[in-house]
Image (cartoon, rainbow, N blue to C red; front, side, top):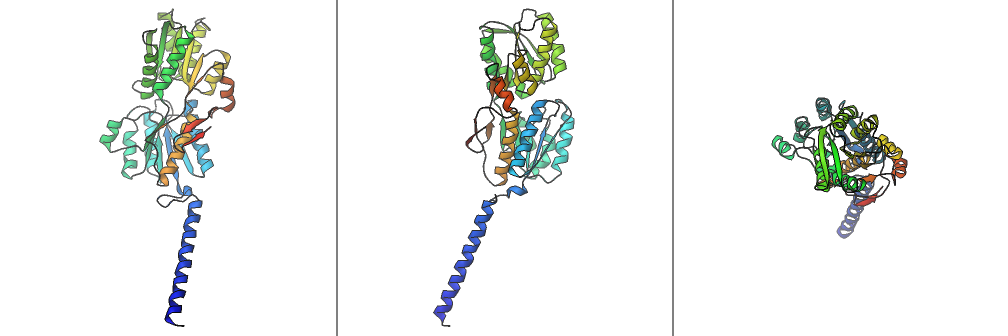
Amino acid sequence: MNTDNRATRTKRIATVALAASLAVGVAACGRGGSSSGKSTKDVRIAIATRDFTNPYWAALRDGAQAEGKKQGVKVTVQAGDSETDSTGENTKISALAAQNYTCFGVTPVNATNVITPLVPVARKKIPILNIDTQISPSTSKAAGVSYKSFIGSDNLQAGKLAGATMLKLLGGTGQVAVLQGIAGEQNGINRLTGFTQSTQGKLQIVAKQPANYDQATALTVTSAILRAHPTITGIFAANDTMGLGAAQAVKNAGKAGKIKILSVDGITDALKAVQAGTLSGTITQYPYAEGQLAVQACIKLAQGKSIPARVVAPIKLIDKSNVAQSIKSFPEPFVPYHNPITGKSQQ
């Protein structure tokens, strides 16, 4: 064989090898691999939230686990024992931090409780998502902890929507009481701020009392408010469990139907109460969707892709007009919404 033939044959072999290499690369991408990230099957996601006794956080867990199953990734969701169990939640985060997870999602009890247990996660350069409730940016920065995205509803807007709805229910005037959540917790602060902005100069807020997002506490607090302010005609509760406690207090006082009650979250019992007329409405925030979005965001990050710095989950006023639809589709949204992670409409 002469020199020219050998050169031609060598060139052909190189071309075939290159083509085979490209085919393998394309096949890997088709299986969910990424040239700059992990294959989907290697993604392991840890999510920590407050507790599962509140159906809101249970729905977030269910959404994350359902999306993990759909995407074929391992999702572990753990929580404390109650809404205020910051110690229990921190213990769970510390245990998860010692394991081999590729992405973390965290909902704090308050603005700072989860920062210390997240320090080891941040040092390993593992991406962290702040879910539902804002973690203090300044305290996090001082500890060397940062977040790839905040995924949650617009609580200020939820409060504004509740305020606008209360105005309509009361004909634009009246005295109202507000049940706040955990002292210093940002979601409750934002909801109250939005409600106040919508009603300022029109409705008179005669009482503002914390009830720790707890139904029994809300029953006690509302009973005291009704004795002190017997002329109120509206109550805004910063979450549904407090709204249900307020409704029981109103019933006990013999004022059922005379006081309009609005709350936030859209849990099953609240939807049933709206259907029964016990609650006037609830601003549903679809925690199930928040769980889905968190898993989708973790997968994109593991694949080396970017995600928005803020991902806004949907909210919707649920009242007599649409509560049947909401119950039928629960815990998923019953209307399509824009998904900032995929850039598409989702339901």
